[in-house]
Image (cartoon, rainbow over all chains, first blue to last red; front, side, top):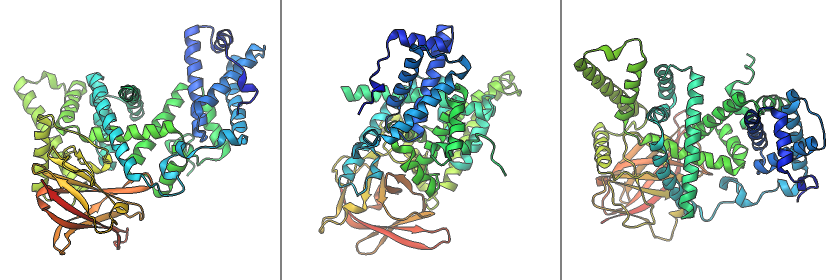
Length: 206
Length: 312
């Protein structure tokens, strides 16, 4: 399953060298690194890979390995370098039938090639999970500042035409451009999503 | 007309895996390492997921979404979250947000509302809140339940307020697009559960595959204090502009009919929500007939769902 390259380990020293390539300021380097890591993960996800995080880690390891071996990469070309390595990792991933295969459990239920005989059981499980998520979401929403709470609830108001009009009005109320409003809502939603994920995980562990 | 580079439509196509290699690379080269662009992509992703959850995607896009976008477990989890978020928002009381927005608006506009005398401020705020609430009710009346009588809706609204006050509200996984803001949060039961309906609303799932037992009808056990019944009708075949559900007794007496229903995707199945007052159902055997209406108005039968009501 693993290729020779994947067996290579990322030590703290090598990782620090990698970070230094991003920026001389350690904090800024960390932010830039994180942006690249997220982007690489998204790349694998958008290309339909089943384990984007593993492939992103593999990409980072390879780049770090090159740098540790003394390869010089100009700061301006670093992101492009990462992307190039990510594409190589992706091509290898496509060629590797074991990595690229998926069990029935790992694909969506509705992609199964036959009718699921325990559909109703799954509907119930789904209902249970949704109720659990709802309880978590209620508690997470309460933790939001008043303005963020009001914004996210108002933003998702209405359907189709009413929704558009509602968002236009909200942008005016909050003195934001439509795009800034979308991004602001996305950030609130992202926080909620993280909070709900953690909450559901904790509930499941109990 | 040539599309703007990296328009929302292009990002959506990228997320659905519809772009050619060159276009994909152009987008990827922009978002990797560029937080601003990456965030734009995430916003497009949120909106795509929401459109799927609300049933707003075309059939082609929906299929593409399910076959390509939903490959990763993380994305499926995000769809689950979106479902939850929509259900949560749909069950928030209307006047609350209207008041918040009204208050927010008053702080930010040049109209300088805060300089008004207090009495005028209260009066104006009350008018705004009532106006928003009225507008929301009108929108719901016009877009959601075309055949539901006004008295029934008003009753449902009252029941929601009562349920909220009593802290009895529970929510289930009905698709948000089917959950009216003025509907109470449904209690969740299914046709195989008995005696579970403690709150004012009971929900049951009618799945076509489960109703073909040898003479054993689906039993819906409805507690006496239940006021509203939600029937979640699941089916697999047929994609129509709208749906019609007719409930009759086995003797052929019409009990209730609902037209203009919209379906929601639920995995390989689709579901429609049929809401009716609990007192429309007695201890009896019923058949729900679901049909689809095409864009040109032709009606085609989809499924029949026999069920038995037992009131306790």
